[in-house]
Length: 194
Length: 94
Picture 1: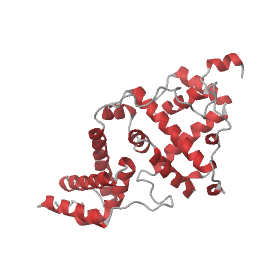
Picture 2: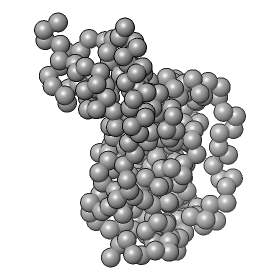
Picture 3: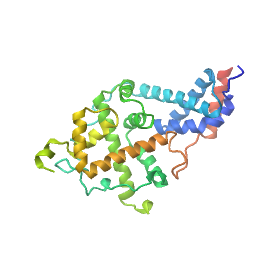
Picture 4: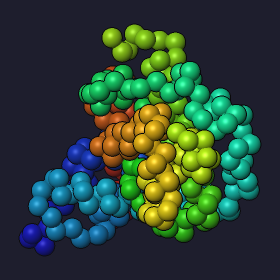
């Protein structure tokens, strides 16, 4: 078809391979799985018909495909609901809170963050490291919600979670990430902060 | 704050969960009102809220997987992986 602008397979791998691989890897956290997902995405792309305008439109289209592949993968690997995914709130000895439920203002995680954090390399390095520390199942839920902006009802349906389970998982993930980022900055090394 | 009032308001521990929930759905008016009152007098919860939103902003800005921003080497497909994918694509095209 004359107006079909999809690149041939070779151009496609060169133009989008690494990008899609990183896109998948940060979400599924397994290099082999990420590679498979990229391959599946290209196969679907070659079979589909795409009428776009140039390489950026092509990329956007492929991101749409790989997002679906990633969700399919999550569903396949987490078919059964996890039992007792997290303990009920309040059962963990949480050093960030005092006994009366107030934040422990002395805690290292409670430090304020400097302005302009998003312009600092150290912040992005710390973010990558802290994301990797999330437990796998938590990371799936968390990236769907925070990176991809999937609505909570949709996530519950996709991953077979109750709204309350999801709420607890997201709350734990956000807090863990915040604490981890604060610790990386203020815990022992100040050097990143000048 | 008056002790009787602070007993009616969520604790910081409660707030940490509520602030997270508020990022995912609209909370009932009475809950939001109590949260607002708590935030009026609690810099630490205000700070926590800002930090959660900053993390979200960072992750949405960077949906391609921490590209170009950090100093770490960006993960790439290996040459062998690219070849494998290429072969699979070619075999499907018959």
